[in-house]
Length: 495
Image (tube, rainbow, N blue to C red; front, side, top):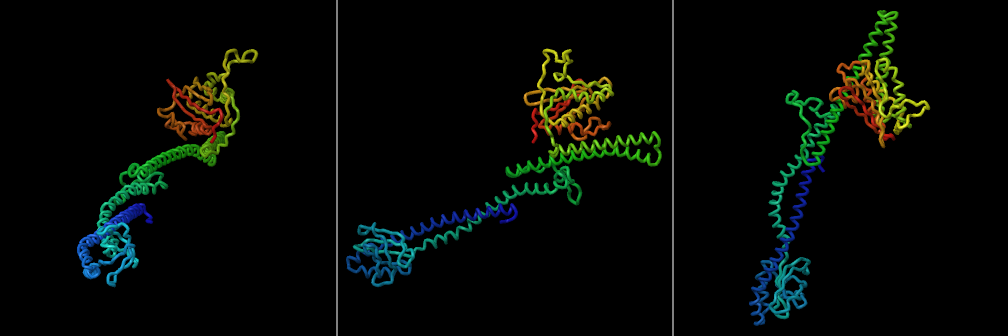
């Protein structure tokens, strides 16, 4: 079996053509052999009919044996043998003339002058075509060796080359076109695939530039053309989709690394500068203390960045180790507000729980006022993960609501199967088209990427929500402000 697909297609066509030629040749051989055999039997019958008047005259003259002997000598050169057959079909030579012997079936010849012909195996073990004419109690038999098989083979030998030529003329180009229609797209896929491990996409498609004649970079081709049979087209479409995803992943990785370099460079530069100032004595006394404090703050920032990267990686690989427990959303939001109330107050920002989640003022007896609904906001989740979700959302909101008098609102809503946590603010809102990108690692709405945020807070929020089987969404509010919505199932759907 050839190793290449083209070779296998051509070999399959050749095998199919050979099988068809054998099948057709065998059928034609049987037909031709039967035609030649019938023709020989008919010739023997015609010979018998032509000699019948002469034989009858010889019988009347009492000289049948002599007449048959003379006729046999005349026909010997043409390979025709004449014998007499008794009623039981036994063949007998004429005047001891050397002739074939055997038995034939004469049951159908019941009347004088009636002919019967067939092909039978005689005593010599060979097939003979014969015709018998009943002249009296005996029959005169004309026979000749059956050569119908050899004659049919001779006819095939003259016609098979024509069939082979027709197969080559028609099948050869057809096999070539079919082979090219399959192997052409596959070969392009092979060339494109060769560059995927090194570049993440085919050459000229986000990977190495395509090279033209003389080593000069050529134009970058687009996706691999979708051509060929349906299966090859589907394979090509899947390959193009895969390489597009690889390019997008590579772009995201490059963007992530660029942002990571930026976020690492700033604290490292600060740490290096203050450490040099302390070492060479430039910073001394209170300045040295301030420098040391700054170094500590930047080191803490680096530690937080590394910790958040580690959290993202563990969540991405499914090793988050969530430990669900029963949580009441109303209590959760109140406790979260208490955690961040001091920080919000220091910036002049009001942090509050709103909606049905907000607990009404207690009555003198300590019970909730009559008629106030108490929604069912219980759910099961990892408490540390949920605390981190709300903490990251509040820190993000406090980072953008910088002017005194701003507001950050927390709310929880419940449905049959879901708990929804909402954190809203009246800050500047998300940048145009940024409601989806804000969940990307290191994405920041401000072009200068100022502030102390690592750019991973909202990415961690979405990953933690998805780890529970939920989702995180964002929307801009009118006329200004933003809201992040986190949907969590009442029972975690952890894969």
